[in-house]
Each structure stands twice: as C-alpha cells, then as structure tokens.
Image (cartoon, rainbow, N blue to C red; front, side, top):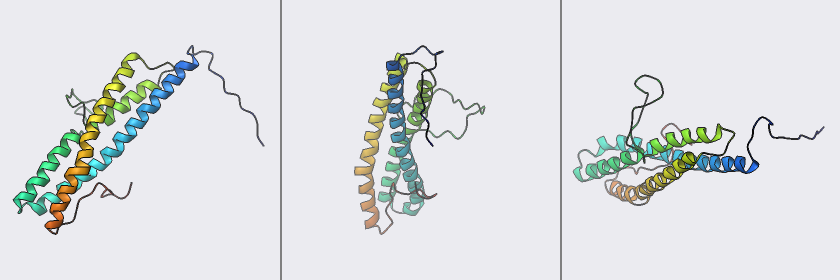
Length: 178
C-alpha cells in the first residue's frame, strides 16, 4: 500500500527556498571537510601509536631513532594538542593558538556544522567566513600530512627495512579495522 506524502514549509518560518538551499549546501561542504579531517586524524593517530611503539626498539640506533623522533615531532604538529577532558568538565577548554591542527579543525568544524544546521536561516556571513578560514587551514595541514605520507614515511620505512625492522603504516588501527 502506498500513499502520497506532501511536504510543506512550516508557515511559522519566514525563510526563502534559496536561503534554505544555501544553508544545506554550506552544511554539506562543512560535513565533507569534517569527514576528510576526521579520516586523516584517525590515520595520523594510528601512525603516532606506531611511532611511539617503535621508538624504544630503535633507541640503540641513533640515526634511526633521530629519524623516528623527527617524524614524530612533525606528526605532533599536524595532530595538535590532545585534550582528554576539560579542567572543569564543562567541555570547554582555555584559549588556544592552535588553529591548523587536525584536532582543532575536527572540533571547530563540528561546532560550525552545529551552528549552520541549527537555524532555519541562511548561514551568517561570519559562519561563511569562518568556514573559508578553516578550509584554508585544512588545505595547509593536509598538505603537510600528504608530505608525511608520501615522503617522510616511505623514507623511514626504507631505513626500517634496512635495519630489518617492520615498516610502519597508516593502515589499520591497533584496535581493529576502520
């Protein structure tokens, strides 16, 4: 059995179809950016876990240890500070000057997504400006991540193979598959 369904605009909301489409389009762009950042963050976290496990194994090889530490420092700059919980458990953290890291971008894109989709109105000029700023920061950060994946990691893995040690990857996490 089928029955027709008619969807109508809420008469209590005074917003044009074009404004709703702008809101939807902006929200979808934010969602796509956040998904990209989240997937990269997961890969970077996995790589960080592997580097932390690898470091004790290469301590006796100064050249190898310095390469692992160098890559780890670069990775930390891409990842950003890790917040396990806020000091007062409010969910809010103090001011940060870290506006380009994956962790910051993931969190701030989530907040921006909530702001844009929670109103029956077009995104404000400030919200659109904030998204463009986050897009620029994301592109820069993803550029550094790309360099880690395509240059730094293969170089390290080559050295690890020469030392007869297992390579590190950005594949599966220690907790299972994605």
